[in-house]
Image (tube, rainbow, N blue to C red; front, side, top):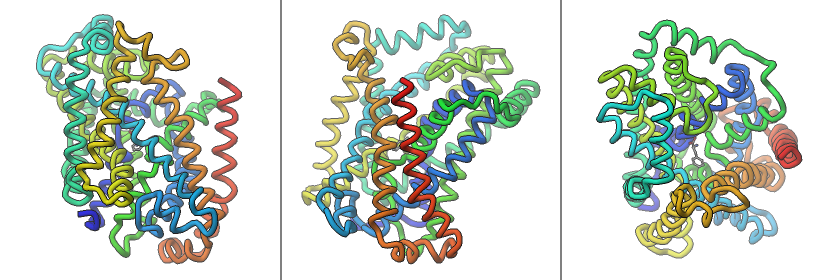
Length: 448
Ligand code: PHE
């Protein structure tokens, strides 16, 4: 099973499935809403192409040239200090850490699918209380929903790359798209709200762009493209021969942006149509604002809510699956254990951390589960998104830019991009990417 590779479309969909997730549905609209709309999108696109795209190709090359799990690929490819380089493969632990709190959020989504079958709360205050109760007082629901999501994700990964991950994505990604298109049509019918949402998303307001916003946009670009934690090299190791790497990467980025914008249009149409607060942050935007808006639409609202939360469930599960695969792939290859065994170890770890995350929001236990004054959940999110992912991305880009032979990279990418573009990419990889990520991280540390 381990040598089964993706099909061409399977790879693009699996990578897009990994990229498109809660990041697009929750972080993207929230950040756009808080940072002045379309100017943020333009900045995000710029950073995606100038930095994330460049680093993405670097990560792809590690997987494609190494053709193994990330640790062994780095070992194989490093010209010197093989052991030290291979250790940097353990940034993939970041993906496992993300999985634990990410699946807790997917658990909330599951609970909201259930809630959407009965009348929803139309009062923002009551809806807010309902959401807070789930987090801080309803331990049973939180644990049950998390456990169900956990089982679904691990079941899919246990089937392997082709029969599990590829099948799941081939089915879920188009369904997500169709559901979103239906919601978009519905949003279109809301006339005024849709026009306001489109204006908000597409008419730029550059005065909102501050250095802090640049940092947030870059963080989002990394998070939403699943970078720096070994997902890309692992999936790339299972690439079919003769895949056009540039075309595939561009398709993945395009799908990621398209779904983010579609989500943004849907969310903001509802928000504007009913005059809710477009700057509500975090989960509040989806679990509180949107729910109260759906409630105003009666039964149609219930149908929309079910469709919306199911599409989020799909998006989340395909991402969660990709977070587990790198470490599973590593354990299976390195220790020659069965996939099921590897998943048992990883599962125990992820499950315990997930429960810690839940307990860190639960009122009776929250004080015992806080780290540096933050709930364990937020601490994990901060550690992974703001520290591990950017450092991982720098290390991998540095490795490819300075340790791999330029010619072997040209052999890999040249036929798809030509010499001139290759030189530009290589220049960005060596000089622009590390400087930009470092500058942004230093700014962030100095500022907070
Ligand atoms: N890209 C995913 C999202 O946008 C999150 C993710 C991060 C997936 C890291 C895999 C690895 O939600």
